[in-house]
Image (tube, rainbow, N blue to C red; front, side):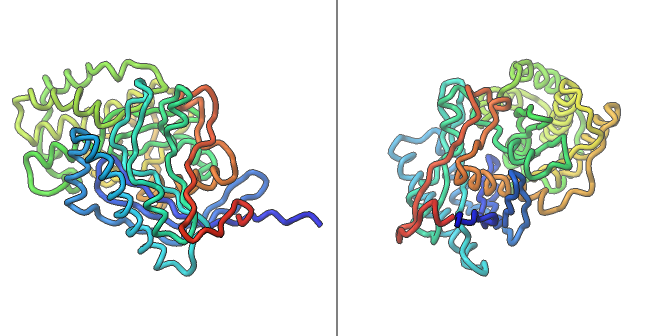
Length: 370
């Protein structure tokens, strides 16, 4: 008798974004039937990033190789404990965990990208296997290593076609085409912290109180990245090297700088959508920027001439945890031995099956068990 193939998997997805605002964890039950996937969220949690860790990670790109190596391991302990605590509140252990890690360097045009959080250290806290390192193989095959979410969007949200994620970096997806547009929360939060108390501008109230600095607006719109064809992707290095110098040279007050940046982000999103010329009439918007009311208001205004509206019916859990959900899905795809990236998105030589496997310390795990 042929062995029955298991069709239901439980996976935990873990995502820490470039804005360093927290660790998103989600436990999903995936049902696989004839190559189609359905998912149900069993549990979710967003754990605020420890302030000490926020500071360490922000300064890490300029530290020594020894400190980078130490932080890679120590952050693995921090993530491992956080994931173990989340799993401890579940009814039963998951089949696997998939963790993106924290991006420190992303320079695919120089053939490297670096996400820290040592997998062997993380898995020492877990009762199940761990999948990490989702980007490097794609970069090795001449890809950008990003964005990775489009494949998950294709399979998990088939009723939607046009996707916008407003995270540290904002990116856009439309039918197998996807790319990073510009910085979002990464630059807004950085500028806010420089002049105001707190980590971010709640609901964009400070940004809304300012006015446009036309000189800064023109300089931002002239950034060369916007003229590059896709595939293309962004990291902190671009924000620090291209965007922030323009902000530093501005003589505008902080409120006007935040106002101008917000309008700039919305404008670049509209420009990117116009270039794609999608046939969709609605846009699924997720990520922390979804709660920036002034940004959303600006976005509605610039999308109106394109006859595209923002989907207001999106499940709030999808808004907050979509990337964590998709990384759980990518972990499942890696276990299945199926592609986790799309060459049409990243520009790699081929669709790639990526992910490094880490076995729990007690052993006793094989692919056959799944």
